[in-house]
Length: 272
Image (cartoon, rainbow, N blue to C red; front, side, top):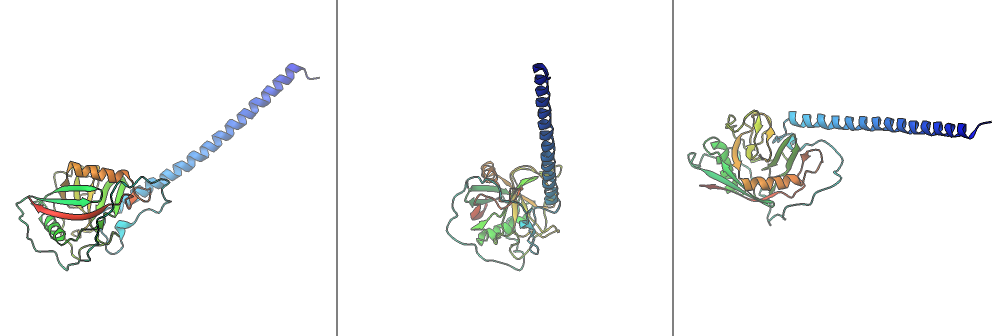
C-alpha cells in the first residue's frame, strides 16, 4: 500500500517533470523563434548591403534604377504626413539637347531656395568649385523645371538622403542633357563620408552623367566620392529634411518613396 507521504512525493515528482517538459518546450520554441529572427535580420542586412553596393543614388534613364527598392510587405504603421498640400500647378515637360551655355558669374556667390510643401530649404551653392552644375541649376530653375516636382526617394538605412529633381517622379527623368562631374575632392568629403547638409548630384553610375536629379544629405552618409557636391543646406533646411525623414518611407526597408508629401512648389537660384 502506498502511504500518504509516498503519494505526495510521487505527485511532486510528476509536477517537477511537467515543469521540466514545459521549460524544455519553451526553450525549443525560443530557439526556433530566434533562428527565424536571425534569418530575417540576415536577409535585411544582405539587402541593405546590396542597396549600397549597387549605387543608391542613381539617375538611371534606361533601367529606372533609382526607383528600385527591395520588395517587402507594407509597413504596419505610417506616421502622419507632416507636410502641406502642394501648390496649384503642374510639372512642365521640358527637355534640351545639350548643356546650357555658361551664363553665371563663377566668381560670385549663388543660393538656391527650394520652397517645398514641408518647408523652405535654403542652399548655399559652391559656384567656383562646381560651375557647370550651378550654371545648370540656375538655368533649369529659371525655366521652372523643378516647380511642382516630387522628391521621389528617401533612404533611412545605411545612407540618409532625400532625392529630388526628376520631373517624372519615377527616378529616370532628366533635362535631356548631362553635365560633367565636378568637385569630387571637396574638403568636406572626409573618410568617404558625405556629411549632413551636403547637396550632391545623382548619376547613372558612370562618369559625367549628372542631369537634374540631386540628393540632400540629412545625416552623415558613407558614399564613394562619385557624386558632385555642389551645395550646403542651411540649419533650418536640415530641420525640414529631418522632419521628412521622421515620417519614414513607403517600403519599411529603408529605401523608397517618402511617406511625407514632398513637392518642390518652386525652385529659385539667386545671385548674392
